[in-house]
Image (cartoon, rainbow, N blue to C red):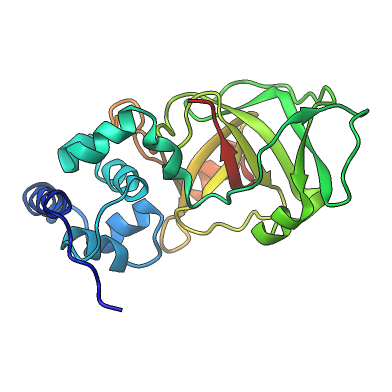
Length: 256
């Protein structure tokens, strides 16, 4: 099937992105590094957006603007306008879409294809600087379809939910979002989102392995790099600061 022709606005997006890359970033990072910051395993996708082979969408705009540390409007004013009126909901398309959720208590009946997932209301996963926490569980649960968890590759007994607090992962995870965590998946896949226990503080970050086994790098999606810079931790700091991976974030939901 022939690739469709880009619209005038889509071509303008690609031209702005290419000009921005050539004038400000090409000498500072490789396309591979930019792709990794976007959560892509190869530079192919980044290169196609950069050269106008495929049109930008909201998800790609958010990832690329965050990776480069620029405002989305510098790349695509048209998509930035959609972002401002709530289009950010589509930016989470790399998190597994599940059926609508509802809170319930121990007296609520389960359908045959449903499973109860604990919702930790007293534990806020800090997407900013971290919040001291005390793990408490007051019995609240969310209902998930077993089939949805299977499609996401999440064992029923390993699924848990909690709230996100802070602005560092906006606009992908707004303050107050609910996330689902697969506690059985602790191995790092570069660019994926993970819940992290950082010396007794629960955080959500995009995680990368530093090449050569030199530690971990935490990346925030918020393009305000002055307040949310990348954080690097050597193996010694990982141990000294009691950093451990709780699990991979596989789902999220938020009110807009």
